[in-house]
Image 1 (spheres, rainbow, N blue to C red):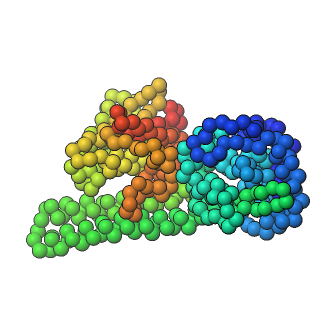
Image 2 (image 1 turned 45 degrees about the vertical axis):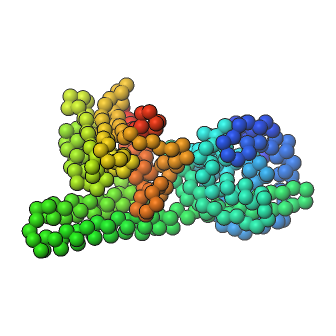
Image 3 (image 1 turned 60 degrees about the vertical axis):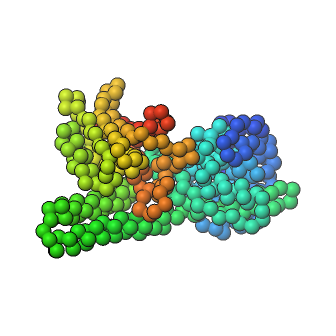
Length: 395
């Protein structure tokens, strides 16, 4: 049977834990002791029902105890983790084995961070513990493999498995990332494209009736907006495939400032708001890819403008801190504590209408995997929200 290597259970107490009950922000924190896990595995290893489950189904299939710790897993799960150098996962929780970025944020690992309250896998497990029927949820896991971040969307199915003297949870994780990407393309891009084309058609009708500089300028602005949308979706698709070529040059800050201002001079998100770009001309220029840098900054600015009320100011700055180039975008809005843990999640948006949810995700993807930098944010009621793009000191 495809179980974990029991000989390694003693190697990492931070992952396997003991019977203590530390604090948690969501799911119960308690873990089974090493002895309890050994006893549980003795009932699982060689059990024909468990053997059949793990061998019969494709994908990531895990057998968990009531503390959500892994006792056994399917061959596919073994193979996936082996690529990341993880061979001993018995006693870990699913997010820990998959290197979920939020697992380390919880006081007791996977399931106990604030972000875990939004995890479909944890929710499915907890629900399955209360009923016999299977529970279906969707979950999004951002993990690090081979020093790169991967974002995978799973359909999680959790089922209670009753064995003599013990109850287990069978968790199946089916990768639906491609399906979700296609859905986002249809919903987001086509939604935005239809809106832009409707605007172009309306202004074209006005232009046909009477020559108008305003109509001509609006048509041009909308056409450029549509071009940018097509370019952004194409760029994101290539980035997720790892197919982008990066060209690093010394960035002309004055030219970059002009490009940012021109991009938003007639952008709908900037209506009634002020954009201030402060890029000093005497500072050392960053070394980066201009196209990707401008795309990240544009997404940062769009989000800031959309989060700002009429009459507000969005401030964009460049500076060098401790030798490191850094861009910041500030707005007076506040990101709530419930939204903050999901801000970089692919397709997540607080807006009710379709057509959003890729901006923050693409910022971090491009910054980390292609520019060698990072994107972070702070948000308080007093200081507002500041998104920061930090570039490496040396390339």
